[in-house]
Length: 59
Image (cartoon, rainbow, N blue to C red; front, side, top):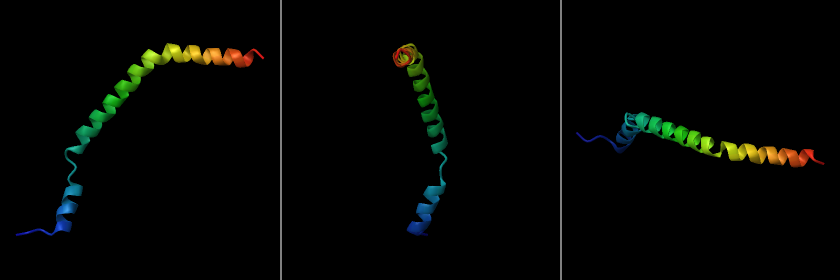
């Protein structure tokens, strides 16, 4: 028995079993990258901010 193309497309759109683990992995990897970059760049960004504030306050 052949199913219509529309029914097959709808079934594929509803079938998201593999999507959740992929999105969880992407989210965790992104959070880890942001945390690593933040840890490395934090001292430089703090110094840059303090330098900018001191220049503005110096006038």
